[in-house]
Image (cartoon, rainbow, N blue to C red; front, side, top):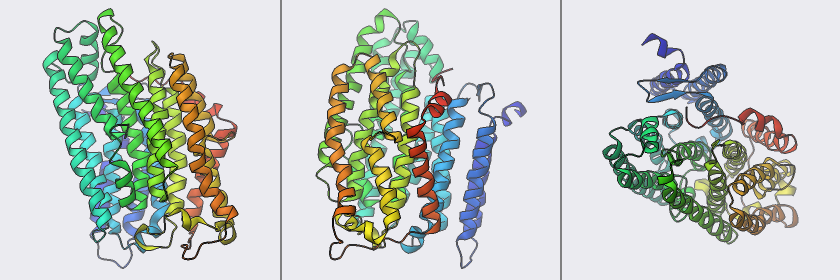
Length: 485
């Protein structure tokens, strides 16, 4: 028992911080600052413990159900950093919208805990529990504006559909257990390579598990929930979905796709089916996301379809992970770059002074360069990066997944992705044109930057530009991180 405590320090710290923040939140004070400080200290301590253990040798704990490795510790530290940036950058939004601030902070910590355990899980039961621990706070946070019908609809839709996909995951897991007699990811992988007698049942279960996570990352045709949920949720919550939840779900999807050993000759036909499924999801996400994105007038809906498009790009990287080395660098780099861009965009979007996110239309950006030139510059950095312009992190992340997909023989899909990049560029350039080339429209909302939001946005913009100019440091740092030990 004692040897397991040391590598588990980041998660123990995070769990203790949740309890402390919950206790602090019930203290009746005029200010909600104690809960905010407790949450920030918890995230900082967990990130420090996580970073300090990255160079250590990987360990499998809890009878093989939990993995502490470079991948899990980097993911945990990044999630803690993203959550801290949202706390610092969107605190003004919570106060303005009169959201239950203390509840928000400890629910956010629970979400981070669930997401980090999801990445570290090596057992399908633990994966399901972590998925629900991550999802339940997200459902609650989506409906935090209780008097707003859009927020209520977003929470209800997210909850019902998420619960249905959780049931699909459990059904798939039961089939896998029936075929292999195990729910341990490594054991299932070994038995599939040895030619399990129940291979058909195993493959059906694997497909169901994979489909449930394709829903979680909003891959087409399972994307339909995302625009409504993004639009109805409070802006910081939409940002958490785009960053922490998407990152955790994608890393877990990578692990679960490779739950089956595709190397035996008998698995060749099933490998073709899996690749075809991902190929269709990628192409659908790219086409639907980019083509509908250019028609949107609401910024949050536009960013939702943008996220669906980026899911398509990420699936290109997933297709490139089927080589013998199981190289996942392109996906990890893309997730990190996309998280930086999304954090900056959603923090800026939270600066709209209009109540209940009513000031998040494209028209509200008109003439912003005259009203807030520095905010216009920051908006431009993030939007250009999302479009994949050179000298931004968005350009190099797209380049990496394109190369990974080409290495997997997906030339036609890369051509489609390149065309979708051109189509989608219009959607990203249009807000910049409205900010710089149009006078402010009558009724356009004002934007109210705060010190915390500007610090976070500048930090994210610096990350986007720095890694766009010298990306090798991030690539080399993440290169070679294995998916399964």
